Length: 184
Ligand SMILES: Cc1cc2nc3c(=O)[nH]c(=O)nc-3n(C[C@H](O)[C@H](O)[C@H](O)COP(=O)(O)O)c2cc1C
Image 1 (cartoon, protein in one colour):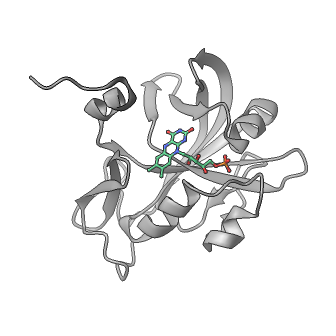
Image 2 (cartoon, rainbow, N blue to C red):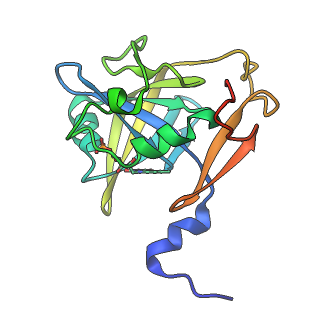
């Protein structure tokens, strides 16, 4: 067996589905970031967790406003997903810079990403300090998806491509490929 260095241990638990997490400041100015470390945590109540680095601009926003939304990007958004994972909302309006659209959510001040194919609106019910990250546990207060690719119970891999992160610059797709011209 090959030894795995501490820095890349997490990659033994990848690939992980990539999502876009949205949040907003107290005045409603939105931000978003790319997240691979998200997970369902409970059926009832429906809880999801996101692990956010303490140095991310979004970390402060989520911690102060106690809310975030998760939008699922189709594979056609790969390049934008990469940019959202590099740029910081501390310095610029990331939605505008990357060319994504903030769409008013149903229950939160934070928007969802209009180009996403599914959205989970969450209120933070718990924050757990985990090393250099914080695990934000969110209760899902609204969830909705594009009926063309989610039949009410599951995604249809014939209709949509989902993005998975292997680590570093390496990505995989489930379902349709990540060609730029894919519509959903
Ligand atoms: C594929 C990918 C996955 C990422 N996953 C996470 C993650 O799970 N948690 C995290 O805190 N940052 C993650 N990042 C890094 C943030 O998206 C990145 O630091 C971002 O610029 C933070 O933006 P902000 O400063 O506007 O909050 C990921 C980046 C990429 C490209």
